[in-house]
Length: 400
Ligand SMILES: Cc1ncc(COP(=O)(O)O)c(C=O)c1O
Image (cartoon, rainbow, N blue to C red; front, side):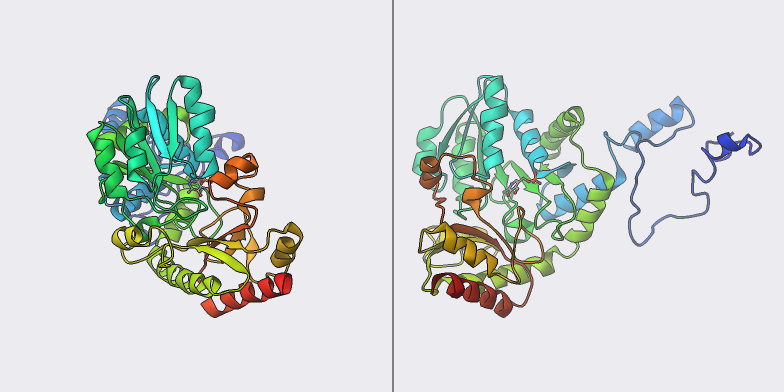
């Protein structure tokens, strides 16, 4: 008897648990990949199970799921790696990549203005297990070199830092890391593979929060790790043990979002350049952090490594340090909304001092270049004139 054809002459309450469990008519190659919402895949016997292992077929969801594998293949292509795994969030990807490659006694060199929760992986997880870290200005290669220790096994950076948009020289960091027998791990969430390919520049592992530009529609959470097959197979073992594999539905939504990555990023990055140029001229804005601007300290590095683009993320510092006026500015933005995320097709903003950097003592936060006057902006794909007008009007209403 086949698992698809049992004897159909059983009691109602038995039949109801089984009828229609398999699609028996031909259904290969649907135009859109189905969502495999199943925890397991049945086999006839141990022969079939062993054959399935051989063919890398599917058995249990946490080990492998078709939607996860399909999205992994897309990410491998986009990041020009050999293999990828898809985790349940960007943080799951970051934690898995670090935990896989570090052990007690190892040391990390990183940037002092990373995404806050990435820093917390160092301080609140890895330190507990005997891993130490040093944070430097990662854009200063001399500082990075000086911070390297004989036990430094990982150099960790973001392709553009959150929220200051500083740009690390990835090729320079790779050289320093490799000379010390360390790995370079790059979080490429801000630039996306459309704007930057860290592996091509010499990084060993690239991680993403695909929750952001990868998905692009504010409706799924997941993350990716890409690198050589050897490296990612080690991470794969770890993420299966940690249980932070992405669910099929999020993978499906993210892959659907990635199909339009080129279109979305081309438009969003072009919009960001226009918005950055307009805001830099605004009398109420003290500083605009966007790598497209000649005034940006790492403009030349960005030009060299960002495939002719500069990302759709920026931050601005308003001139007046006055929270009441800042709130008036926020309330007067009509199109652009406050969102505790980024990378969607609508322009959104966030106030780092009261959200992502809320837990950091003010003195430390100021050293990171994150004052109360900073607004982080994620630029979307709207008409740029509408976005510019929204910011300009709101600034005038609050500060004129
Ligand atoms: C640069 C960067 N990396 C990682 C993350 C974490 O991503 P997730 O929320 O998908 O875990 C974020 C979240 O904002 C981020 O901005």
